Length: 388
Image (cartoon, rainbow, N blue to C red):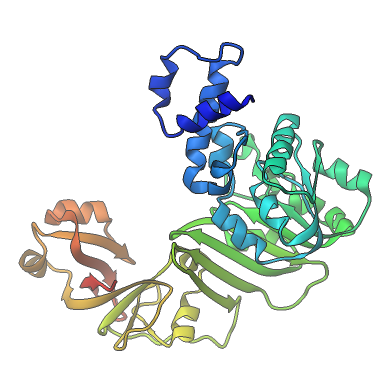
């Protein structure tokens, strides 16, 4: 696009697309819808893809692609996990992951079946000064066959087929079909990194794959964004679950060996502090391991809340307990009816919405209430203050 059009797009980033659409196109030689799409996509990129947003002459493929791509923060973390001489990305997309992989590998191959998207990424990488990436606008299986070379790593982010939406998430229902192609992939690389959506069940992924060494669970600001299955040809050792919660000022990490039979949690009634694990740990299922690693007590086998008398640095939220009350009509009337509080349920028979309605609890404020079950199977409420 011409410089003056790019400047117009930059100047109007963040503007109302609805209002802009009513204006006359100042560049009649270019489709107005195309320009509006660029403005909308660039606006979406501001927080998610700041490097792209701040670089001149970037072309965006549309807001949907920007919404679906990795954020820079998750892409940078992902690239920190692996390195080598060569990597081929079989599902290149908008190229955010490859931009960061290019800083860790000598040679990158970007495969993208859409010729238009492949051309856009090639153009953008020139603006971003990436010089070690080759582009293939073909089916990735064809590219692997035609190049016929060995790579250090294959990276792949399979997408669900439209006819599989609504069903249980399985890798075999995605394109490419990784389970079917795995033996072929291992002819081309000994190490493979597979990215999946967070809704994939870990055990389902393990049942479809082989030679899994690590499973990485990546959350951004406490929202799980992606799972990474790291597999190495003929690996037969223990599987490690590695969680990371990427926050503004730090990264919360936690890891454990899957199926470790030496882990025995201790159960205890509420003590001075209560802890709620971050979303990456919750996804991992390593609830007993949290108790063992941090030497804190579990409140119930199924509650996934932890407690201690001494405050610890914990990968999640920490609260000081002000009062513990039994979940009864009299206690609730005395303590919480018509009050303002943040309500959370863990292993509790009622929903947050019903609890709020039943006891007229307004949302927000400085009070945090955990409706849960203790080790004696009693229904209780922890009335807490959050520790900053």
